Length: 441
Image 1 (cartoon, rainbow, N blue to C red):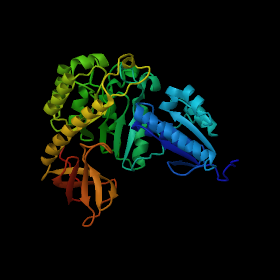
Image 2 (spheres, rainbow, N blue to C red; image 1 turned 135 degrees about the vertical axis):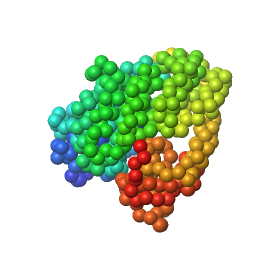
Image 3 (cartoon, rainbow, N blue to C red; image 1 turned 30 degrees about the vertical axis):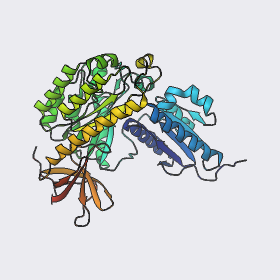
Image 4 (cartoon, helix red, strand yellow; image 1 turned 180 degrees about the vertical axis):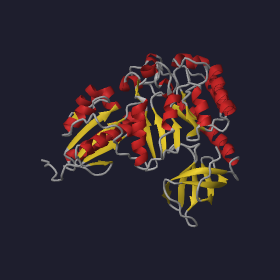
């Protein structure tokens, strides 16, 4: 029979899934620290909180496997208590309680106060922006809203995150100021839908006004936009991007598909012509902008012709950054009523084809950077290189700039002028030409 560990209570928060989950874990950890609790992120602790993802099949499998891993550790006496929170728990709590009953408690995405209570802590309403960031010190995610009102047929996010709810500008500015005081220089704005920001609070799309407020925060040098929805995109954001040097020439705007027939079934409220016009407007207004998008292949009813149309469009549009995913048939979504008629191997073949095409496009675009100078922030040292990014690249998903460490010392979190000397499909190589960045914008 197992016995409890004799360790002092140390709470280990394990984060799975997207940047929104990272943010939620950081808020949880900030609350625990404010309550005097000892808390770590993905290190050893005798109390474990698993923040799960429930978005698509692969993510759900990873979450379930992680829960089972820690239940085994609990049975072996390596940990005392295991709590599960996040999207998987929100979406499948009754099933999880039945299948894995030895978890101490399950909590949904809106039950932070109850989770804290189970951990012997009180929810501190007065805390604004008091987070324990888990990203490198120079950048942090800033979640500007929660939930989503979009009816996309393939997406389960509204089931797990609820309706859209914007965070007031004043509160986000305070949070940004606190992050800046702690050394954060880059804010990555995240939400289920940046485009919708402000409609509930201000009765208008207010992302541009939020950006104008955030650029005034001393110490912040870059502000990056993630996860904008194409329909109803507020065009005034482009003018702010053009006029404010702190707003990166970068946007992440998931487009998902381009076949009008598939877009209609996906309930995306747009067409190929409208989507192309929007991207053309982006490039006409901010010609230097790097556009990242994501696509879904293998959606129910996607024919060879639909896929070829998508592939040709990717070839024509030459996106700077692109990711492609195989469709996942998710319960309780509208698309779940459709026949999942594209075989898994075909889905993967199509995803691979798109990514092979994008790899060539990325290589060609990167070759054009050779000989040019860019402002680069250093994220880390890895092996024999300092690893950094330009304003056109987001952490983890985009290009990196590699600078040989044997000849130069660079400080993590600082900006340098780097001249690109060579380029691969997703990596750039460069040398320092100036120890301090000079502004050109």
